[in-house]
Length: 90
Image (cartoon, rainbow, N blue to C red; front, side):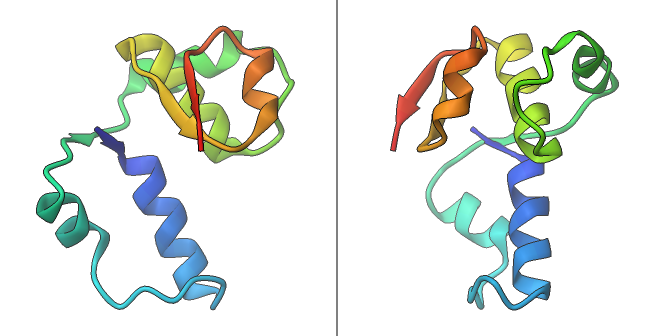
């Protein structure tokens, strides 16, 4: 699965010139067979109960989604260790 949060972050980085990616994220997701994970109101509500270990709002929402959906996050960010979310290290 790939979160809509990740696509949002990629789009912002592209617009700021921090990421060169010509192809739409939606096309990449489809080509690789990922399932899209939308952001729900429940995901947003879970943010209130997360400890403040991570200041990045994108990462906090990914953590909330992973906890709610029983998913593992692929990341290189060691701050994720402070949450009870399963992590696969990139």
